[in-house]
Image 1 (cartoon, rainbow, N blue to C red):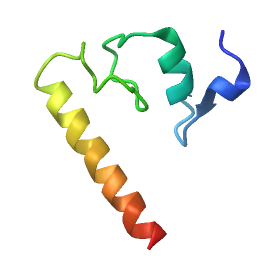
Image 2: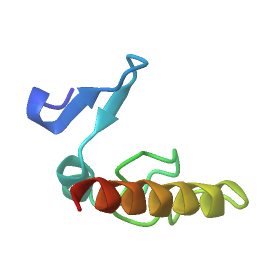
Image 3: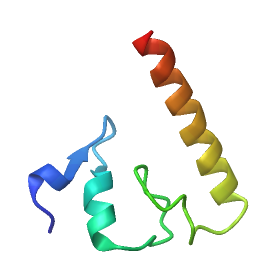
Image 4: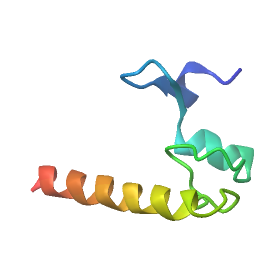
Amino acid sequence: MPDDDELYHNDSGLVVFTEEYLLQRGYCCGNGCRNCPYDYKMVPEPRRTRLLEERKNRQASQRGEQE
């Protein structure tokens, strides 16, 4: 199991791996990890497109909150 600094639990109690942990693993597992640094390369369509769109919306929302 990864160290505590490599994961956290979201509001629903699910385990979420950090981007750093996923980079160390070295590949996309295809599970649609929230912090996937590989642009969901192994996630089948149409889910991959939906996940990329959700990420884009999250990032835009975060930028808006910072301004």
